[in-house]
Each structure stands twice: as C-alpha cells, then as structure tokens.
Length: 494
Image (cartoon, rainbow, N blue to C red; front, side, top):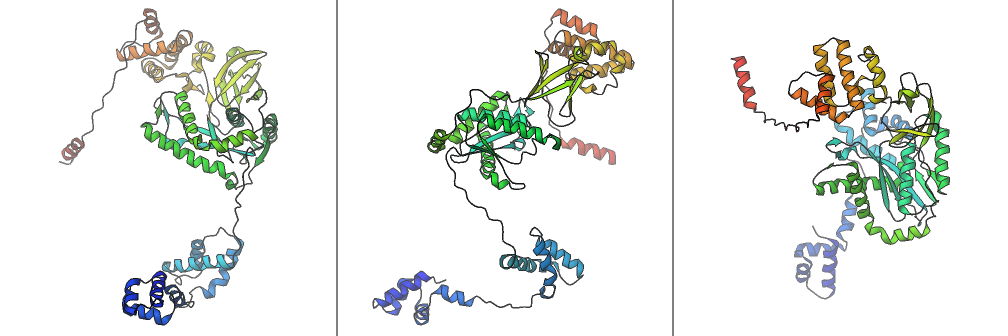
C-alpha cells in the first residue's frame, strides 16, 4: 500500500528532473503506480477519505421503532442497548433477530454521541505541598496471607499525601472509628506533621448504626481539631474523588503481592514479622518520592504534644450471666462484677475493663456482628457448682479451649450419663483455670494417646508428676491410588 511519504518522495525526485522510472524506483513503487499519482496530484490519504461513503447500503431496520426507544435513552443514562433490544424483541415477536444486536448497539452509541446528554467530566486537580492527605480502608483477604499457618483476614488503614504520593498504613480488622483514629494518628506521627486537610470517603462503614451518626461526627471532629486539620468527604457514589488513595490501594496491593512472590511464602511466624514486612515495603515505595516529600514536610503543621486517646468509652452493667454487651457483641467478665457498673474502653484491637479507678483486665476485641467471647476462667467456679447448666449453655463451644478438651468431653459423654460427664469435664476445666491450660492440654493428649481413663484425678496425677508430654507425632498421609477404586468398582459390578 502506497503511503503519503512515498508520493512526496516521488514528486521531489520528479521536480529534480529525474525520469518517471527513476523517481518511482527511488520512492519504492513501480512506474505504473508512479504515473498514477503524478497525474492525480493527490495523496493516498486524500483519495481514501473520498472513498468513505456517507450513505447506507441497506435500510435501517430500527427506523420506524426508534421514536419509542429515545424516551428510554433520555430518561436513564445507565440503560444498556442490549436491555432495550431485548425489550423490542418482546414487543415485536419474530421481527428482530439476535444477529441485529450489533446494529442496534451502534445506533444507540451514535445517538448518545450526537444527541444524548453530556457525560460527567473529571477535572484534573493541581496538588500543593502539605495541603491534602487522603485515607481509606482496603481489604487484604485476596492476598491469602497467613500467620503461623492460620488465615489472617485483615484490612490496612492506608494514608497518602496527594502532592508527593508518600504513603503508609497500619493493620486493622474493621472499618470502625477506633481503627480510623488509631491508624490516622500513627500515620501522622510517622509523618512528623499534619496536612491542612484530611479527606475520606463517606465513612458509612465506620458508623455502625444511623442513630450513632451524631456521636461519630462529634468524635471524628474532635480528632480533626486535635491535629488542627480540616475534614473533607467525597460525595455519595463518587469514589473517584478519593482518586489518589484508590489508585494507591491498587498499586500497594500489587506491590505486596509481588514482594510475597519474591519472598517465596505468604506465611509469617508472627503478626509483628508481617507488620515489619509492610513497613519495609512502604519505605521502598517512598524511596523515589523524597524530593517532593521534603517539600511536603516543610509545609506540614506541627503535631500536638501528645496523641488523642483512640478509644470509645462505654458504661455498662454486668448482667446475671456475667457478661456485657458492647456494639452487639457479648463478652464475659469476672463473676465478682455481676450487677456492678463497669467502664469499658474500646480500642481497635482490644477492650479495657475498668471498675472505679482500677484497671481490671484486657479482652481481645472480636470481629463481626452478634458474636461472643466467653472466657471459661470467668465462670468456671460457678459452673462446677451448677453442672446441669453446662449441656445447654448458650456459649458452650467457648468452654473448649482446644480440640483435645472437646475430645475429652466427647469421650466422657460416651462413658457416663450427661450430668456425670459434665461434672468430670468441668473438674478438668477447673484444673486448667487454676493450674495451667497448656499443661492440662498435654495431659489430655497423653491420656488419649495411651488410651488411659480420662478424668480429673488422672489429669491431676499427670500434673503432679510433672511428666513431660510426648512430642507431637508427625502424621504421614499416603497418596491415594485411584487404581484401588477402579478395582473396587470392578468387584462390585462383577
């Protein structure tokens, strides 16, 4: 195919007095083609443009129904052409075949480009040093990270400065205000200053119930005031307005995935090891942003003298079952506190229980709604006195600290009546509370492995002797040979 460049070369050589044969050869075309373009005095692109037809080769099959289509297009931008096409097929059975879908889609596309409403415009923003920081939560589940072989389902509170793209983040487990407060403050103190403005999405996930909106707004505004920052939120259904952090989510998780591939394993010994891995990765990502980051640092506001307390406070009364309810979750406390009011400080990862001015204990915060965390040490003394309450206890599964405790109870239930099995098991559980849960677990492992009688006396004897537990036996599972199944099927059908 001859190009405009070749024709220009042809005319150049002809103007220099070269023969048509030589000029054509130098331009990379034969003499016949050269003569054609010499006589036409037009470029190939100009000829091709003239060939483009502006007429239809056949009648438009949608002409007489188009007037019924445009009202749908005008009233709803999101309506797809395929949906309208199926609507026409239902209105006019047998008239429009599936092969005409592409023709209809082209007509809809042409109408939207020439007569339809204008599309939303995204206006590129100019960023200024120290002006704006954006944050959001991002789920890390798809990266399949494990801690000591166990799935580690978590989120990362992700923060970025929009001018330099300097970023950092912290591990959390829910989109709660406590996670937001703790994560943002940790990021700001790592940064060494605060930007003028902090932008988030609508924070709907951090507001657990609509009736808590005012309380949440007051707490969040208090956090912003403490760091002298202005708060900004995106408009509803407009994630692009938080575009910097959304884009960094994608690139950050891709970088984590690549780093895990290089590491050769997605399993970490401890959470601390994983946190160190993430901080090293953030440092690596920020390495090439230093020049703009130094501009940002110079424009940041100074930090206050101390961090703001990141907890949410509750005052609750301990119920007759020795439990409290915090944000739709049930936690047990010591039975001494029944009917008393306790103060609870809810952090992103744990609860602090206070009575008066005394700090009683810390309890791990559980995730999800309508869940429970019952510590058998809180209630075991009274369960021993009321063994009949054990079998139908609402939170029964929380009274088996390990799988061996469950195995021990199942064995006792086979050997004794329900009441006696409960009494014996609760005596063993009381030993775990009074002595050492790990040692009792080892004792049960020994008794089960040696097929010895399982009861509180034998467990106590094992603990008294301080006999070291046998090492855990490695279990080797042979590869299944499918030929054995084939042979079995042949014998059955034979």
